[in-house]
Length: 183
Image (cartoon, one colour):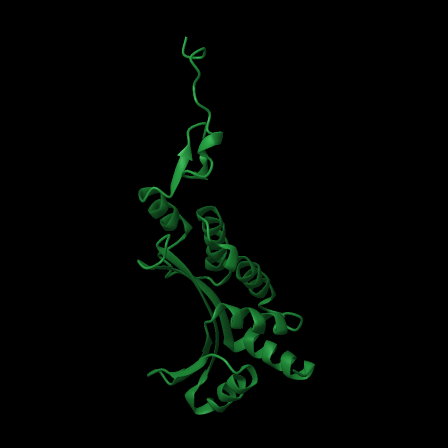
């Protein structure tokens, strides 16, 4: 894609776009939560043709019309969001921190197949709450950690209550009192 077009789209993202991540409860997921990503561009429905042009440029996502007179172009597939953000990263100005954090999360997302990595990514998702000025988020990394603990996926280590270990995976490293230390 031409650099001029990418710079234009990056400016559109800076002004009328949004990048966000959500922690979503999912009973069908092994650890009970999904990290959902969205890249969105907004415009008055009467100017929707620019969103159609964007969709044509990226060939992914969908456009929806809201009852409020606003239309949005949404890309939610993580691989596509990553691809587009990597294209736009050199040109973004206002949302540079958002793009950097997004790419960090999206690069680690496929490896998030264990509890420790999931929790680490949830903490990164929490940072979006601050940089997006989000006030509505109710599911945070704290909610996820509490859920994981209550379902036996995480257990505190007795010698360090702040540090958490994955149950079963590091059990061999857990100190056990010997007969000599019991007196």
